[in-house]
Length: 280
Ligand SMILES: NC(=O)C1=CN([C@@H]2O[C@H](COP(=O)(O)OP(=O)(O)OC[C@H]3O[C@@H](n4cnc5c(N)ncnc54)[C@H](OP(=O)(O)O)[C@@H]3O)[C@@H](O)[C@H]2O)C=CC1
Ligand SMILES: O=C1Nc2ccccc2C1=O
Image (tube, rainbow, N blue to C red; front, side, top):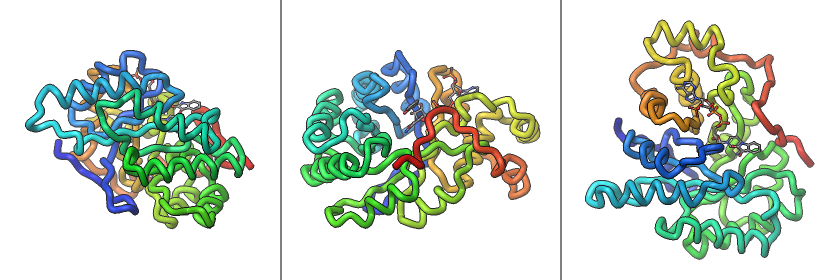
């Protein structure tokens, strides 16, 4: 599979999909296997407790074939947790994040995990994130679980010097968030779609299964393809090494408009976990 990428608003590129790593305990071996299978983006977070292991998986892969495996071809995402909000807290936390993966030399994309801590702490955190870009230890910054009001707040902030490049939010056929996705994209941010497989709760949905049979793929591949055709960047998680290649093999088939519509459930709002996009 060839490496495919989408543009970010700062001129950088982001892979068309990535590997989610929440709840992956043996992340070093899974991440290394994912890169072997052709993944080029890894999504972790302070919350997941596996940044060090994810970084080690990337380093193992780089060291395995230094001629062909280059740092610039891997996109490493991490996120500051809620209790790391605030200017000096965040500044320290960013250095800790980098120290855990020091062999990677920089973080490709750093996100504020959620907007729950209130306006003052959100903007202070973002100030520290901007400075990390300016000092070169982080290449791009963005937000996660931000609603329209939070994005407006940030884009109209007089301290804004480094634009956010993405909003990472839960999106699947049962949590479509069409307005928020459209709004996010209209403001120049890419949508990273988390829980694209609905955390597996709806993976046996009859429409997904019947389309999977028709196309000769799995229902997971159908859901990942749906996300890509919607214009999002899905980050499905699997800790099962035998599923890695299958989940990435989503560029060899297409869903028609009618098939996309068959999967859409705009009337359902069933997030797999927290839902904080409307918090004050
Ligand atoms: N920013 C945020 O607030 C959040 C970010 N995230 C990010 O998004 C990622 C993905 O979301 P997540 O909640 O993990 O859920 P996903 O929608 O990615 O679903 C993961 C589940 O699907 C199963 N699965 C994966 N592939 C297949 C397959 N081919 N066939 C059958 N089952 C499959 C996995 O099982 P198994 O692993 O056993 O193979 C796991 O149980 C997270 O890991 C994290 O990186 C998630 C939630 C919140
Ligand atoms: O991957 C994640 N799963 C979660 C569950 C609750 C809160 C945050 C998260 C994640 O970031």
